[in-house]
Length: 79
Image 1 (cartoon, rainbow, N blue to C red):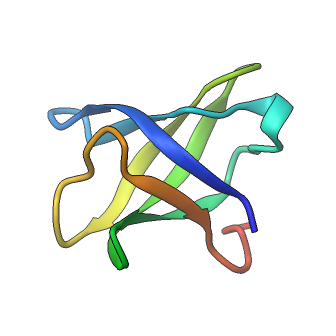
Image 2 (image 1 turned 120 degrees about the vertical axis):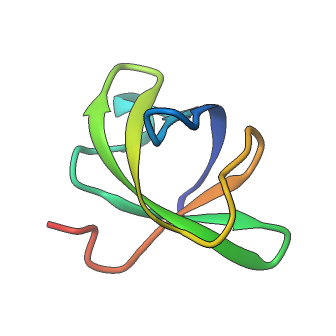
Image 3 (image 1 turned 180 degrees about the vertical axis):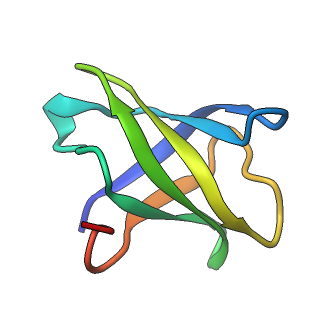
């Protein structure tokens, strides 16, 4: 199971920067759970992928994502 981290968050735009990109297997359309500790706090969808980073938009959240939160691939990948 792939686990990545959030590098940065833009609350105004509802966008997170994923600390992984094409080299790590991140693809557009992937849906990722944002996990803090043992609790899922949000869901994001990858919209832009670069070599070493990716951008994802917030689809749903109970709590605002923060840098350092883990990202786990959801089944179905949103494709």
